[in-house]
Length: 100
Image (cartoon, rainbow, N blue to C red; front, side, top):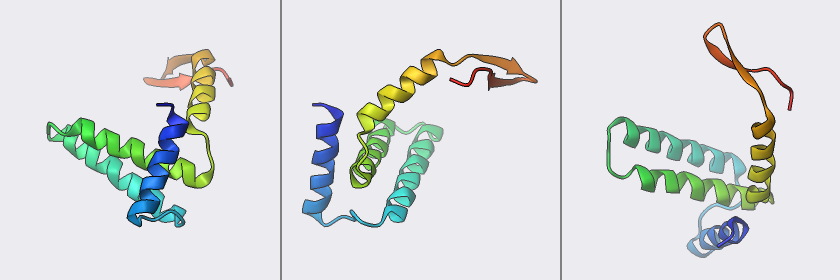
């Protein structure tokens, strides 16, 4: 299944179940909460890290659909940009040296 189809399916599930599809601030907060849960699962070496990462992806795709963003296309564009960027270590920190 293509990511765009998945976005639409996730959004439809939100509608079907009565979840929020209008309060973007709330969706960002819920996404943040899912990231915290995934971090906690990783930090505590829990076995459900994959499920927690899936929750992040689901919230992100739902938010993308709410905002009318084709997340797959945006990821492809950003990956192409990142591929051409050049980095070097400056004062112990990996720093981008090109503007691409």
